[in-house]
Length: 54
Image 1 (cartoon, one colour):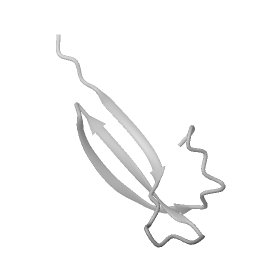
Image 2 (cartoon, helix red, strand yellow; image 1 turned 90 degrees about the vertical axis):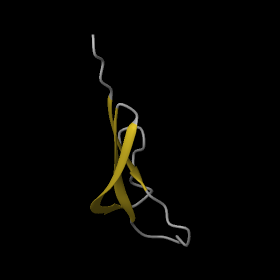
Image 3 (cartoon, rainbow, N blue to C red; image 1 turned 45 degrees about the vertical axis):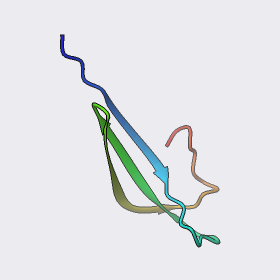
């Protein structure tokens, strides 16, 4: 039997010189251990981001 794995994760990507304001939302897609990160071209305030819900 052939098994496939698939994971989708949304997260905020913090910049090195971040002070305040919105952070870009990124999506990480993992298929069979191979990852790709894609920008969603959207932003969110870190205080409003629910990391458990993504």
